[in-house]
Structures are given as C-alpha cells and as structure tokens.
Image 1 (tube, helix red, strand yellow):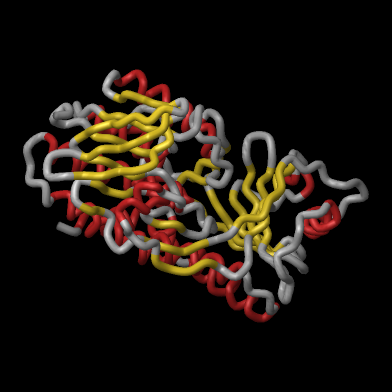
Image 2 (cartoon, rainbow, N blue to C red):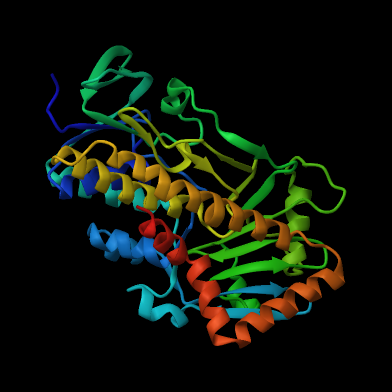
Length: 397
C-alpha cells in the first residue's frame, strides 16, 4: 500500500506546482510527475490578477515573482488611431486584495520559483522526464504509469490530480469529454523589444487595442511588448511571413524602420470544459479541466485558483474528513469557470473584434459610463479581477 496520504500530481506547470506546495503546507506528501526534462516554458500566460497574487503570497513566492515583472495599476481599452481610451484603476478594489494591481510577467518565470519552493518543502517528490501514459484507480489507491528514461515505472498514491494541460493524458484516461467549441480563426502573437511606451505615452501596462486595421491587445513586460492580433474582416488565417508581421506592427505605430521581432506564432483558441472535475480518486485542475481564450488573462489564474481549492479539499480528506468533500470542488469551481472565466473571455474577445466604427463608439461610451460611476466600476473590477468569482465559489456548500 502507498503512503496513506500521498497524492500523485501529473504536470509541473504552475497548477501542479501550486497544488503540491499547498498540500505540503498541510503536511500532505505528493509525487509530482512532469513529462518535460525541465520545468515547462509556456509562453502564453503573462497576466496575473490580484487574488492570484494573494494566493502566491500565501505560499511564499509572490515577492520573488513580482520582482521579475511589471506592476500594472490600471488597464484600458484604447483606439490607437484616435488615441481615444477608457482607463480603469485597480486601486478601486484595494480594500478587497493585498495586491490591487495586475502583474505582467511571463508564466515561465513563475514555474522555477514554484519548483524551488516545492523542493524546499521536503514533502514533494519531483520526477522530471516522467511521461505519464496511463492512470488507473481502485477502492484504495491510484496508479500512474509513466516512462522515465525510456523505462516503464509505476507511481502509487491515495489520490491523483491531473494538471497536465489542455492535452491531458489524465482526462483521456478518465474518458471525460472536453465539451465546447474551437473558434474559427487563430490569434497571432508577436513580441518585440521596441519601446512603445516612449512613442505612445497613452499606453499603460495592459491595453486592449483597436487600430484602423486591427484589433487585439498590447501588454508591457520587463524587456518587451507582447502584441496579439485577431484576423482582419474576411481574412483567413495567414502564414506569418515577414510582410504579414510587419503590416501588423506598422498598424500600431508607423515607422520607417522594420520592427525587431523576437517571437511570432499563431495559436488556435478553444472554449471547452469537462462535465465533472472529479472521477473517483482522480480530480482535474487548470487546462486539463477547462480551456479558454486568453483575452483577459483568466486561464492560468483560474488554474491556480483550482489548485488552491482542490489542495485544500484533498488535505482535509487526507486528514480525516469525508471523501465526498471532493465533490464540493466541482460544485465550487465549475460554475465559476463557466460563468466567470469562459463567459468573460468570450465576451472580451467578441467586444474587441468589433470592426464597425459605430459599434466601437458604443463600446467606448459604455466603458466610459462604467469608469465614471465608482460603484459600477468597482463591481466590474471585482469581477474582471476574478475576486467576485472566488466569492461565489466560496459561498457554495
């Protein structure tokens, strides 16, 4: 029999690592299995919301992570052609969080910090290069079968967390469908070291942008700008040739010289979720349970919120509470994912893909009305920063 309270965790991204650290804080040992030979370098997430920073602070990593990023005290919707903008100040929610700002910092900076914290706990047995191929369970235990250095190996525990991303092996083994849809067109990501802040003083750290030709977002990181673009009206997904990339960047700011590009890629966008986050002794968290458009930066944040929630439930069960407490995890987190994470991300994407000038004016007028009303603005910020969703989840029993 395995250690009575050992939990197997598949996936060593932020979701799996936070799960392991939270379990360790409650005295629960875990085995962390990661297919990559090093901590994953995921380039998608770069926005961390206030309550997520509060959670990272509680596990002792927020301070080191914040040092690597850009503190963004407000965000805005801006038309870069007219410079018309509406700005929202996160100081309005300072009474509801210890971190009334967004942090703009790449996800791949967070994972190594979490990795070291997990190792330092003494309760997390980490296996890099362990590619899980199958998981199974019975009345007493779970078993994860993996290939490590080409050799088959088994890892046993009392419970298992599948935190292995959108292409989750754990989810496939459970036979749980990822229900929803895939958007017709991909999103284009381009990063550049060009200092837009020196040329466009109206920019802040987080900008949802329109230009005369494009729509997307611009996020300021420590030494570069991350720019995303949606397909133009009537335009199919395009190969990212130098001409296509330069056209997108020149749409932000006309320059006589070409832009220096560090990264370029198209990626497909999905909105999907499993019907249940739990099946027996196995639970899913993060992208293994739900995938969402990146607009608004809700995906990684929601996954970390899952991790904190499920680790609390598992620790309580391991320490003697009833196992059906694990069903509360789905009841608390899944409705929030549907109503607050998936719905918000979809609404953000649809809003920013408006091309008609009159529709854009209507959006700006609506946003301006929100910003001018302190109470409505505060309510909106509590929701978009994910604080309201966490409160809704906590109220479910």
